[in-house]
Length: 298
Ligand code: HMG
Ligand code: MG
Image (cartoon, protein in one colour):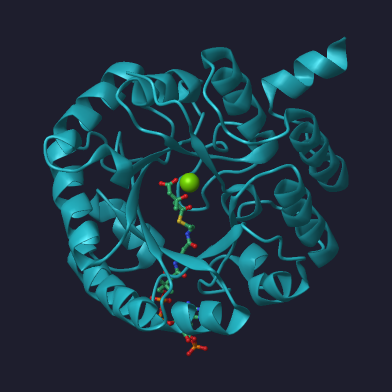
């Protein structure tokens, strides 16, 4: 049955901007994050404390955290792959951090430069440090419905990594279809396997829209009780280690779906659309939200 309320984790400022080829000014980032908060988004992934040589667009995440206007009730989070990243996030005042494992060895090597087990050992150190500082940790698993390098991924593999992330102290695991290849049937199969062992409250879905399947995958997840949905305003984004992968599903389009289903979310769609259009104008990019495209065609 459908949840009555859903929670959006807006990943545009991180997942959306990390792969932009052009320069992004700090002002544009800060404006985007503030506009999202003002539109009612309560969970915003505002940056990443990763190796800046690997992901130059996130190099100024510390400056972005310093410059945003913190809205009460909003959690501003950041990716932290290791202790060095965690220390930077702590110094920047991140409310929450996220660690990110992969369900495929090949992707783990490309994205984290180490195998899955080594990544989990590093993440355990991050979680311990975060616990000591009362900072909640979210866990991601990438490639849950397929890997760009090694193809098929078994639900059972995702289950064992999800268990490890929760056991080390993550409060939630976000399931990433990094390259947007999965269909609703794949989503159902994955969740059916995970839900045998993991309470639905601890799961989120993170659907990239490369094959146009993200909204149907999200509907499938909602129907199985998942109520935390990651999305990116204007459908910004892609992953630097998954060539050809497009952005996450557009937040605007998810909100339109939730409205249609009568599921509460607390976000003002018009303000959200304006925030999405503004960052697209600044970056000289096409807006990938279908809802915004439909409105501007009227
Ligand atoms: P490495 O190069 O193996 O690290 O990277 P290292 O420990 O050998 O260090 C190399 C240099 O990087 C050193 O500097 C370190 O100090 C520095 P040097 O001594 O050469 O001057 N360094 C750092 N600097 C700043 N912050 C740090 C940091 N760590 C090391 N945190 C590492 C290993 C994990 C750091 C690297 O592979 C990395 O940064 N990976 C992250 C890549 C990334 O950001 N990917 C995109 C995000 S994940 C994603 O998009 C998927 C998701 O959306 C879900 C989905 O869609 O599936 C979440
Ligand atoms: Mg992603």
